[in-house]
Image (cartoon, rainbow, N blue to C red):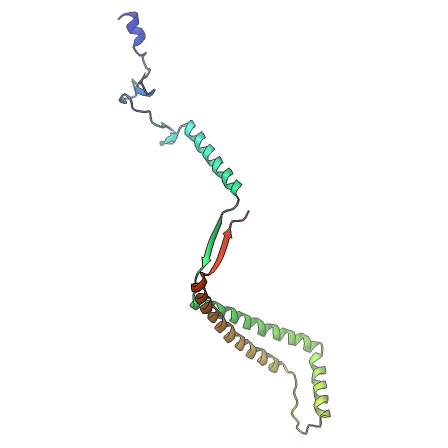
Length: 197
């Protein structure tokens, strides 16, 4: 073999490079890539057992992620414009009934606590005495007199609470029907939802 042939032949253990710049064959690797085939984009990672992306691809992915984050931060929080087209009357009736029951219980408890507090201060005794004086001064011959008692106050508050339950539930359901009719005519209420800044 001449010196020119020795210089042109590939060195032992080196890879032959094709016209595209890729490695054609690696002696000792066990396979040969055909000429013109581009090299694989990943390099094997023997510690994990799967192919890991090359450093150039990682750098490009990091740059793309930073660009996306900066673009999102520059345009502000995301916004969405929605239309409230229909309200289900059955769900409104159930919700309003549950709320009215809670308000009924709150009204009874608040009335009882307020009556106990005012009775401990002697307010109802003075009011009852004043009512007896007014009825006696009026010359009424009947022995019936109006007085504030615990049972009477709680019964009146319970009656008002029941009326409130019926009216609140009925009016809320009727409001849902009216909204659906109006939404069919004008398109409903437009809502703009946005993320927190």
